[in-house]
Structures are given as C-alpha cells and as structure tokens.
Amino acid sequence: DEKTRRALVQARAAILRAVTSESADQLNAVLDRGRVRRVLAESAPRDEVEVSRSEWLPGWLAADNLLHLLAEAPGRIKPCAHEHCILWFYDTSKNGTRRWCSMAICGNRAKAARHYAAKRD
Image 1 (cartoon, rainbow, N blue to C red):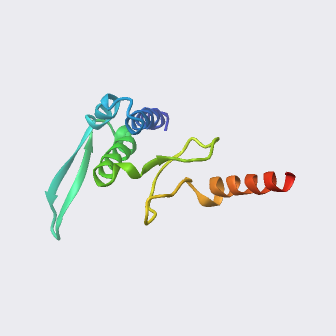
Image 2: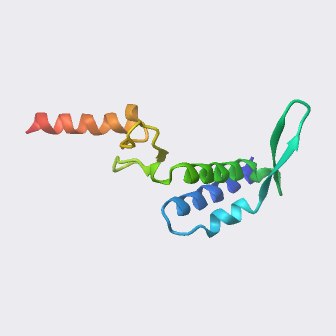
C-alpha cells in the first residue's frame, strides 16, 4: 500500500546515507520506529519485532539487517562497479573481490562492452 511504499522509500534513503558514510541520523530515526523483543515460546526462545506503525515493518527490517551486515563485515557492502548501475550488494565471495551486483547482468554487460570494443579496434 502507499503508506508502506513511502516508509520503504524513507528507509532506503536512510540506508543509502548510512552506507555512503554521509550520516547515520536518518537510519537511527528508522530504527527508533521499532524494536526486537525476546520471548520464550513453547519450544524455544524467539525474537519478535514490534514497530510503532505496521507500514514501517519492511523498512525497519531492512535497516536492522544492515546493522547485522555492518557488524559482520562492513567492508563487504559495496556499490556495483557498472557505471550505470545504482545498486549496492553484500560481497559474499571467498576473497572479497566481487565487483558486480549480478554477474549475469552488470558483469556480463561490462564483459560484452569490452569484447565489442576490442573487436572494433
């Protein structure tokens, strides 16, 4: 719905500012809209996410996931190397040298462009 879309757009902008080291203020404002509550269920403990308004749940979860990635390996959050791509990704490669958000899309485009440029020359 429209409220959820607006909340997600705000969360996305806050996440982008945080990963580009512009500011963490907006991300913290998104995170202030919810919390994780630990509960003991019948079979095992579990986490329950509580948000101030339901439309903030997807955006809050995305911001919370970013915190986990930043705690794990902040240097592995990278922008795609393709000049026309605006996406960021979490580098899961063994040696941390991945360059493309998707090898099938952006990586392939770059390789194809190099190939065609070499054939023209």
